Length: 350
Image (cartoon, rainbow, N blue to C red; front, side, top):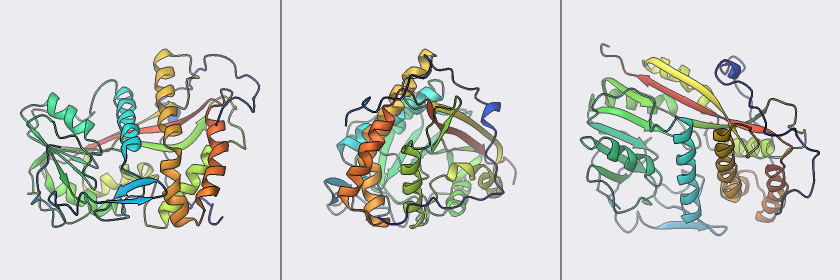
């Protein structure tokens, strides 16, 4: 095996103190002794809005298959994770968790009768479809590298196969909200993308970037030194860094929004439990869903980055994941990851 080190972070950047936003999570029961046996192992349209947009030609609907998983063919290799049915189901579960973390809302940006909404990296289209229902007078466009969205959608919703980092042809000052959720594992050049978004937004328009940041924390000392999920995340991060992707972009995006000219930057960090260990019933449910999101996607999120960038064999990945699965199901570990709720506004006056 090769390259398992975590790339260095910028020491000058400080993540906001979590305690200011989210107090320690109280566990339901005191942590029991660790038990090593605790776990067993289509509203589509062609696009003229980007120089790289593609109609639904047969070539766009082609897929790449690797290690029993299916990947996008359009801009092959740009996104490191699968787009097959198991991954689609997991993405829908992540959508459910994110909505719960926003208090049942689809967005935090204060919208006033939006007429045009763009969802970058729409995936299965769940967020775009829900926004189409919530704002029936708005045009909602979802873009993704994979044409995996359902065919039956609200009449004001459409999907495009597109690369968000290609040059945009959207008109300046034309969009009310640009939404990018969980895109830190896909974007290479954040300043360039934010610049394109800034130009396309109307004066007073909003950008929203909700993001899970997979850094494991713990408030009660139950996070063991040999707990393997953080090592898995470090390896994924190192693999993505080799292709120019910064996995923990959520840490720096508030500063990037400021540098791009945005104002009224609103940034809140929430703790998201991994597992149903919290005492609070709502957090217990969120923790159960969140652990399922992670557990069910372990092979999907590791097999590509580990084999392509780190030189692991599929067999080595499987052996490593046995311990990760076991650790995720250990009820004595009261771990959490982080959810960044981040939005900002384009000023009314330049």
